[in-house]
Image (tube, rainbow, N blue to C red; front, top):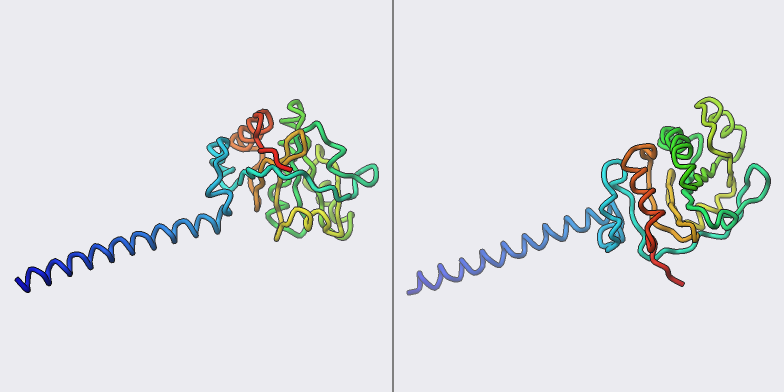
Amino acid sequence: MRLQVKGLLESVRARKLAVISGGLALLALVMASVAIFGIEGVFSSNPLKRFAVGSMTKFVFKDAGMPAPGVAFDGPDGPMTLSRLRGKPVLVNLWASWCVPCVKELPSLDRLQLAMKAEGLAVVAINMDENNDDALYFLAKTHVTHLALYSDPNLLMSVALRVEGIPVSVLYNSEGREIGRYVGGTDWDSPEARKLIATAITTPGGAARTE
């Protein structure tokens, strides 16, 4: 009898350990996913999330739909704000000539602007260099011709967007509300990127409205 009871207790203990181990493994998986994609990227209920595949795997949809910041930055014709582009979907990209991933992805943003101009998309690539000459030299060297030079040497936009590094790209709908963002460099001219953007900017409620 004692042996049976002992065996039963050991069986129960083993099951408890298995449940605990499984729970810890699941928790570790969730924490790793949050670290990579952010808490919204893991738990977002946005139906457009299914388009975050391929080169857009790390694109995180923002269910809150926060409005674009109102800070000013330098444009080709003087001071500029994102509110001046209201009525158009906008992809804001923060980059610098010394940032290797930025330099690698910028030509794809140039091609994206050309490819989706008919859809009304405005790609606003904002340079973070202290000196515009570095940015102009790079644009000329890489034959980037469809992106205007915007600059923010005081980093006001990066602060307003609460970014911790570059490159980072933020997609806004025509109402000026954030649809989502991509942290890091990627190929913005890929079929996945075009599909995600085209679908998001034409889907009502792509970014949930909030006040």
